[in-house]
Length: 441
Ligand code: S3P
Image (tube, rainbow, N blue to C red; front, side, top):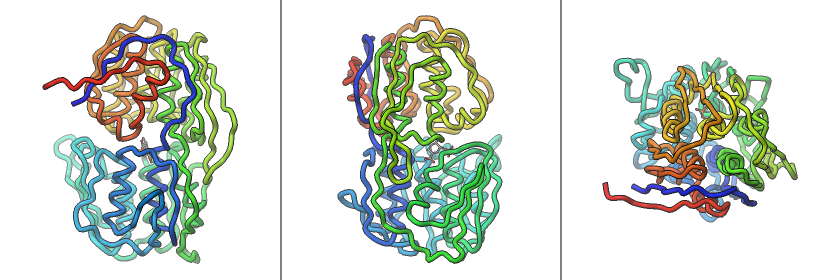
């Protein structure tokens, strides 16, 4: 097991680019595989999660090499010879389940011990309403009624479109249903309680799919469509969720960081809006658009006093992956920060309400767990901390940023390679003192 030893450093500053966005990367390779020809995909992060999606598609008969995905069309996938291993990646498993639900062959999806603890009924249930046959491992006791991986997807003939009112704002759920909907008879719509990320609808539309979007509703209607996704170059922009760790590092140490070419899709900018509300100096420069996604260079200048804020509702949906690092920023703000409407954090790579509170306490910060979020008492000096990642990449990276202020050890950091394999190197480039150790256990 690898740990990081982090020593306090001065202001962290620099001008960097981060690896490609994880969410967009999954979609780029998955949708490219369904196009009608060779489709160039550039800017993939090299993170393990995206590589799981690539490997799954290869196992389903898609050739992927040197940045080109050989699209096989909507009906060109073939049965995999073995279970598809999604590793730690919830997005791989949920999106693939939607796609495979519509195929005329059986598939099995497995993952690592953490993924096997994550709920899958949220996709199996709506897909079942479309006529799909998705089964999983039933939950026991308090979790009765829930299902967990491994998942088995049986062929079920032509699916039928549904109008689905989703109980959760989840881009993975929405995407799984829309993918199945591409193959269904009739229109499929998904209505959501909040603004989940919209990369699926942007990219599918960019490739020529019959997608319509409304305020909280997304629909696909394949009737009258020629069932062809056009191969077009897909460029994956920088991951704003990865950028958040480096921008936060500037904020908490009083430095200045510029991240070039980050995705600034409004469904992903909740972190920037939250730190701006805390009083941070945030600027977007060189705005542009690529493959249907807005992009900019993001600059955060530390040094201004920060104040605690109340975060809830849509803003939390738009910052859902950034809550651990937002909590570290909140620890450096004057006053209390509360984060509500964040019950989804309980079912991420770890229970992020519990693991974020444990992280803060390790650095001497007073933090309270709530059913659907947390409260952080900011403004006291951090003390050196020792934090277990609990197998969660975003907990490991948030802890490293806090340790750049106060010093500390982050236990079990290999999982950072799932989304941001170059994190430690980039943090060092900004001036952090991070070394690796592999203690015998
Ligand atoms: C993702 C959607 C979000 C997010 C995850 C990636 C995606 O999950 O937390 O990191 O790529 O669709 P939910 O769909 O569960 O909200």
